Length: 170
Image (cartoon, rainbow, N blue to C red):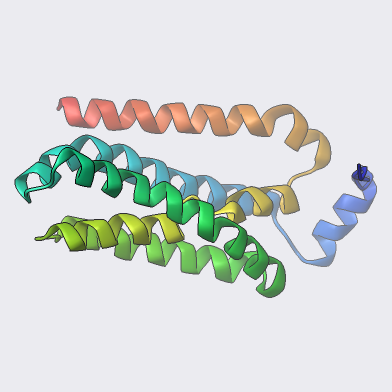
């Protein structure tokens, strides 16, 4: 089994300075991207059964529509990871967010099951991108990442879910 050698804090700071990475700005970008995905997921999922039934979907078809997103994430996650290693995190992150936006528009204006399925698949292709995780690892300091980053993301996720639930209650 291969052991991962983490850089020291000084080496990591030098890396951040070399590429002029501002950890605060990068963290804001990552959190904003995650919020878009979480809000999109939590707003689409409660409405999807009614939309699918209205378009004439059977229970099996509805299950396929739901699972198509996860299958696309499984297939395209490693591909996005390789592309981000080759071309950099920022361009892939921008493409991912643009693709997620197009997928949400496709879902919003879907008038057939095929378009609904295509929207869910497109969201799976571009959404839940591993670039979020790798970009976070790139800019965060080792001690910060280990201690508070996971709890920050958990807090943001919980906050997104609560805001979405409150907005639907209104």
